[in-house]
Image (cartoon, rainbow, N blue to C red):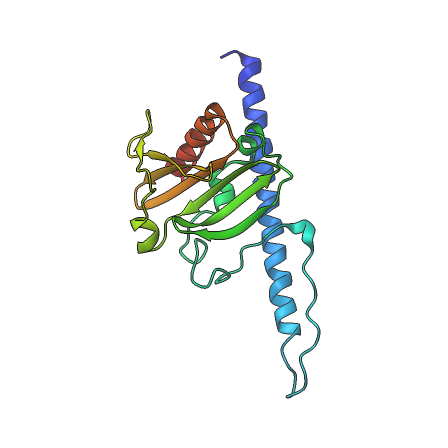
Length: 196
């Protein structure tokens, strides 16, 4: 790898780190606004509740503790999925860095999904026994080059990659992403898990 290639890669990584920091700041701001709005909506002196301010849709979906009905990754002290699945890698896979995530729970975990047209990528933590017990209907096969990782395809076209690092278990979900981009995302997420 030449000097310019390395410099370009470092620049992309720096851009990704800056974008992750911006997303984290936006999440914190959104959470603060939600808490403020909630406290403004509480009745005062037995009176009727005041109006709750609407959240800014430009901020995307902020994680609010308990928003999925039970503790999620933040309450368990885990890194936000947006930091585990780097923005530059999502962008290269065809999901632009401007794409906002949605926070959701799937049978295999809790996390974030970014959707842009027909393409989507998601990263989910397997936090509860039912997440860990869930098995893809068609079974899973090993991922070459990553110890303990397995992969599966679902009937709706989504591809899942199960990654394990210590006691952390995550699922990378892709849809409409080619095999090469999925492989890049898999190795990027595995590297982030190993580093964190």
